[in-house]
Length: 176
Image (cartoon, rainbow, N blue to C red; front, top):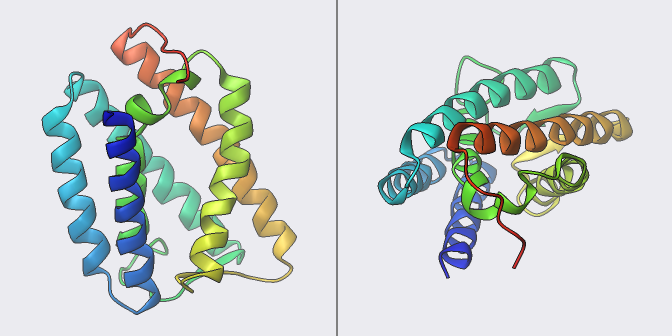
């Protein structure tokens, strides 16, 4: 049951962040993300490991988003910070880190599957943010951006799931 609750709440946070950004507002995403982070850490049985995942994810997010923006592959509708990656997208990276153990536990011993799902799911999230909410724009020629997003997420998801497994020494859960 917690799997579904976490999934639904994470998607609600994503919606708040992306729809807010599409309307020029950072605060809905930042507020929702703050609540999600507090909630997930309060419930966590592996708080130290999840805090480490959060830090690693934020660092990866800042680097990758900055690279993608500086390369001219993506542009944000309303970047509100001095960094190329706006605060709302980094808040989503933080929240994503806190879904690794609860939503992606079955990938901890399956790095190739994690890479495949990252390569597909990451770009799909950007596509939804772009086409549905205009929070991010993929700059033509867009195939460069889609390849970069797929490659980045194909590395990020297996890295985070591997770190989660290592830092928690959790037995690998099967998919349900």
